[in-house]
Length: 344
Image (tube, rainbow, N blue to C red; front, side, top):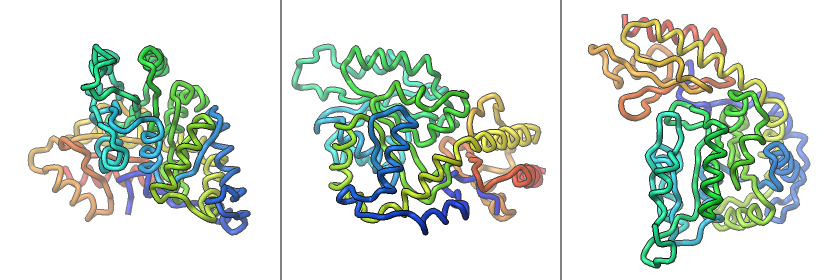
């Protein structure tokens, strides 16, 4: 089966699993697991932040970050197409007493400054308003097709946030893909945000885990909230060891995923009945539509599955394919042939 539904389906390399066997362990609930500490320090250094904290998932990492930044009853400004808003079960409202304010998302994944400005009340002292306490950015932006936010835009948002005296949290689940796409060190992206979460378990191919980085004070608050949410772990070095391997060995190879995504996009673009703008593919995510009237997207995805290709629907009748370490160029060529056969 060619698995293109998501890069969450990546499997750890044997070398990555081997690190678990030799990991030095302690009780991370007491901050005494040396392997976890090593991972957190490595993550913070790579992203140019003071400290980091390991969490079980990206959902918990984003939730704990929002709760750490925001007092109850305040607003979190989020992309109306963001994973935080659509896919994370409304946790900031349920657990944190926070209010999501969805901001219209441009096709490039950006939230226009004018749209952000509208979310701030003209009278900042009026107690009847729920006041914005945080701006959340997603980079790369998943539902916008893996679009990478330009550095010039991040500078613009940083200036606006400073003007309004609110912090910025970046959902950087695939931030290393963004750095590879821009060909810059990841810290040059992270420096515009007060906090960043990134996933070890997507393109980096670790079995599980996400890391939040920020200041020492902020990270300790996230660590406390992690405990409250049930995410404090004991001998978590068995998670951290593959994470260290991922951060040490799996970043540069993300370019291969980007190349395979472009290969796939170029291949299906030549098939009658497929709508895709190849120029929109920037990272490892490809979004396309089926325009052949004889085949709707439901039938198309099912036919692909039967023939050995897993794809997923992605809203508005779109279909998403995501490349990752479990996919090579031969898999991509076979996937293209399957799609051609379905529409023939």
